[in-house]
Amino acid sequence: MSTLSTIDTPAALIEQARMQHNIARMQQRMNELGVRFRPHVKTSKCIDVAKAQRDAGAQGITVSTLKEAEQFFAGGFTDILYAVGMAPHRLPHALDLRRRGCALGIITDSVESARAIAAFGRANGEVFDVLIEVDTDGHRSGIRPEEDALLDVAHALHDGGMRLGGVMTHAGSSYELDTPEALRAMAEQERSGCVRAAQRLRGAGLPCPAVSVGSTPTALMAQALDGVTEVRAGVYVFFDLVMRNVGVCTEADIALSVLTTVIGHQAEKGWAIVDAGWMAMSRDRGTQKQKRDFGYGQVCGIDGKVLDGYVLSGANQEHGILSREGAPDADIAARFPIGTRLRILPNHACATGAQFPEYHALSEEGALKTWGRFHGW
Image 1 (cartoon, one colour):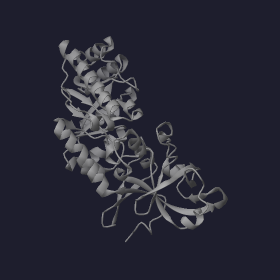
Image 2 (cartoon, one colour; image 1 turned 180 degrees about the horizontal axis):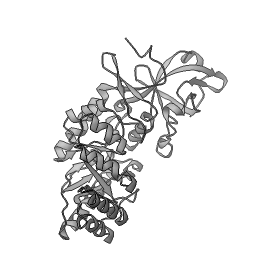
Image 3 (tube, rainbow, N blue to C red; image 1 turned 60 degrees about the vertical axis):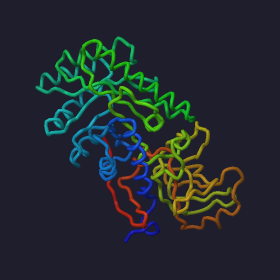
Image 4 (tube, one colour; image 1 turned 135 degrees about the horizontal axis):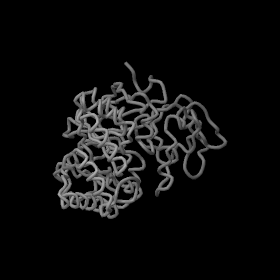
């Protein structure tokens, strides 16, 4: 039987008890707020994880690529929202999924894209379900709730024969906040902006059944979600150091880590060298701009307990540099002999998970199972 001492490294570990706790926490919060929860499965890209979310009460899933939609549909998930702006060249793939029985929803935030969707749908006898992306925080994509373009896009879809499914938004700028007050305010800004967009559509005589919002911080910090029909969030299932700095979890909640082995030392520098470089941890340095910088990750013992003050301070492709914050550790070689196994908590769970083709799911009893992970586009 494989164990943490025998599997090859670097390896992506999921601590199942932590993951289940995170899933239960989010689902309970959504139940309390009275909204449907549609998890974003781009974080795990794993059927086993998504099934655990569904078993806890999630309804439908959100994906970031049509390949994810394809693979989750093959795994038994039919209610899928593809939450990236629809490019015309992807419409044939979306059509194929729908004709095979996938209830695939798509999104747009431009008149040009909306017209392309409608023209393709009419030419192929298909009525696509389309949500309009709303910008509630200036973070990335979408139409601001009061813009004229909102109604222009809605009419291009509705008058073009498509099914106007509603509005959706993602307050990604919540990742830049780190106080409960700021997070609650952003959650309300996200909610009110998306609800306002829905009101404008309905006021113009257009349908708007869905009002979909979400990010992990705003989902967990929202005080009320009046007018919202569903919430989407993804990274909560594993959490990570960025979320720790935002303030919605602690290190003890982080369910994803990278198992690594000490392979050398630079004792005079206070370094231990491990076999988890940026190819394992990713290049994501999301904590660099936050209140605490964890380098490329927080070092833990093989048991998952945080080793305070020790971080992955540098990384090359296949080499990680483990060091102590502040004064170098003169006893680094004795403290971490060659062959020592450690775990590294990631800055960004989505990016670190993406480096691996599979997860090793660790039970409370110490048993390991292999869970596959999807790759590519």
